[in-house]
Each structure stands twice: as C-alpha cells, then as structure tokens.
Image (cartoon, rainbow, N blue to C red; front, side):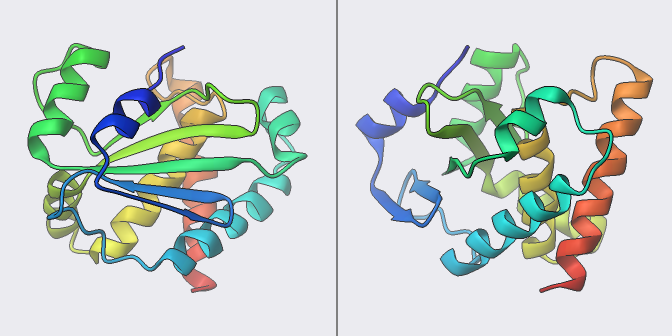
Length: 173
C-alpha cells in the first residue's frame, strides 16, 4: 500500500479538517474554486448513490457501511508529474492519483493536479467544478477497488457507476 500522507504533512502550507473531508493544499497558488461545503455535499451524495448499487464490490459494500474520512490533496504540475512518475512510472502528470488508506478511519487519499484538471475541463468544454466532481468520483471508485485498467468488463462497470453518480450529483447541485 502506498501513502502520500507523510510527505504531505511535511510540506503542507494549509490543512483544514471539514466534516469527513480533509483538504490539503500544496503551495499558495493551488486553489480549487470548489467550496468546502460542496466537497462534503458531493461526498454524501456519492456515498448515497453508491449504496443503491446492487452489484457493488464486496470491499466497497463493507466500506460504505460506515463514514470514513477522505483526504484531498491539490498539487501543481511539477508535483503532479513527480508523483505520477514515482508511483505509476509515467513521466507526465495525471489528473488524479488514488492512495490506499494508512489509517483505520480513512477511505484513502486523492491527489489532484489542478493545472491538468483545468486543461481537461477546457478540452471537455465543461466547468472546472464539474471536471473536479467527475475526478472525485473516479478517484473514489479506485479507493473502493475499482480499476478500469484491469480489463474491459471492469472498465465498463466502473464507468457505469461513475457516470451514474456524476449525473446524480449534477442533478442535485
């Protein structure tokens, strides 16, 4: 299991605990434009939607019985590239990385590369906020043991759940 939390604690410039979502911003220029209350609302909506799933993986079912803290980390392009290289052996930054929990009350950590997400939002012709929501769901599903890179059926299942949760959150925000 990989964890980014120890490194984050050493270099973090701002840490805020909000309900069950912990937000960590690395660097003064990293700003998500998503209100703290919105992250909590999304988290609750996603959990509610996932609990309706009949074909949810066993690990996900066990996890969703209780509310767990999720840590959101926001990084710049340089840090995003370094982490993607270190943990996935890819030389380019990615939009979101998922790290398994190291603490019992944690669902895990999602590391968002803000400049990549800004670019992708423009490419997809959607708002930054909607792109963040989509990636929040995507990363969360990885934390629940879904992996679209395993095979086609796993990818189809993950994207079906992801799209359903995304639509549910868009309708309710």
